Length: 166
Image (spheres, rainbow, N blue to C red):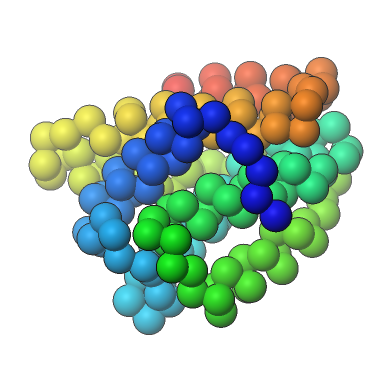
């Protein structure tokens, strides 16, 4: 299920996709596959599941909007041209739509940021900072996508922002 998001948010997702692909050495328009890009897929799914699940359950109500928003962002990162790999997408969709946990705590590290730090060190770039900012923007949008931000979501989000910027 697709829903409307702002052009600014849509552009941020594309930018995040491009930066992550650059860090992982993947063509900006290539669709990903497990056989060629397994590490990339695993890292992105670990990180976005970790962040999204915990923000979504912070108010004890993981909404369909939150789940669909995460799925939409994953689609942009993995399939920038819109040509989706049905097998990968179905696996991801099942996982996202069924997440259930009771204890919101975003785990460390964020693998894509750690990978970007290594890339930055070698290439003298600042992609880790850009990726961090885009992930924080994603997290902020996720908490509001269902129309409200609960006190618990706000607390988990603020803790995440302090932790990720530390």
